[in-house]
Length: 403
Image 1 (cartoon, one colour):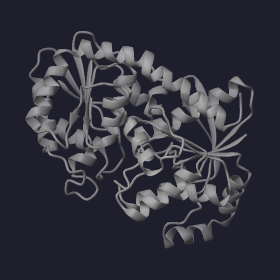
Image 2 (cartoon, rainbow, N blue to C red; image 1 turned 30 degrees about the vertical axis):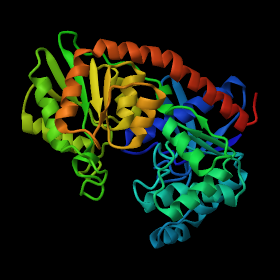
Image 3 (cartoon, rainbow, N blue to C red; image 1 turned 45 degrees about the horizontal axis):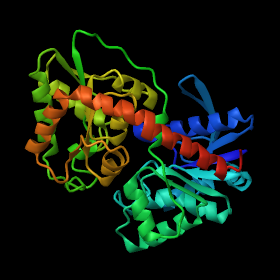
Image 4 (cartoon, rainbow, N blue to C red; image 1 turned 135 degrees about the vertical axis):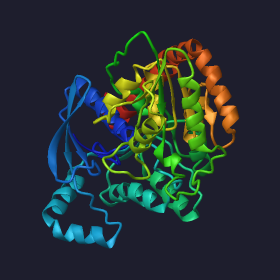
């Protein structure tokens, strides 16, 4: 069985996007291995530069995939690249031709126009290839929309209609797609990163370990650098007030935990902002976590916390799914759809509607009742999340035509 996993990076500084890719491969690999079905994964947007076979570890499982070339040019530079790498282009084209299925994870939340047209075009390029080569197409659990631009919305609806299987990860996406395409069959699942394996990191028991993920994207005002996401809060001020509060607490160590990382400073690099904050405070109880080389290491570190807050959604999913009391800090509806609607988890900040003072007060309240939060997570993981895992496996088996 030849399977193309679209919009699924595995070599990327965004550990959340990589978590989705690993989790999807991990789940499908298990389904097929349990049935003794030979299979090969192909990743056209893996982040790997050359067409080659790769291995990647997910818990105790070794996953194999072949990286492909991106053959849908979005610029003149990419068109020239295709001409100069003709051999790689032909090999990739052949992989699409012989593929049995295309499954698309959409980098979690990028099948939308909130990040701009260029990002949408990048995501939608795989839909175009699916239609071109007439391959069965599955939209894996992800946020779909919003599509404020009419032309983008028209394209998106065409892609959704083409897909034989459509899964979303939250109630808001389900409702949104149903408004656009009332007759389309949609299944609400949950974010697949809930199913990613991890090994909990142990920290000293003499201290309370509080984790905080600081989003560089929000710190800098988005890609446009002018409060692109329309936050009501002053985000840098809010982050500092949270750090100040926890450093004043007895026996607390605050861990700044970047979830989108890179070796250079740029608008998305959480590590650079966290590094600067640690330098600014120069306090032994403010700790910078390692620069994680993979998403499982990041989740394992977060799993060792006693309380966690974050603005990168997958950092908060790592906490929730490892049953660490978590206070998500939302900047888009993807948070609300997952935590408030699907998980019925009311402990969350909405930085688009709440003030700095309101959010800080909620942080304090949640920290004081963190054991209650942990109990809710434990119950949701064994009911809501487990039921959706089983439903996802059922839908995948239907799509892949296996029993």
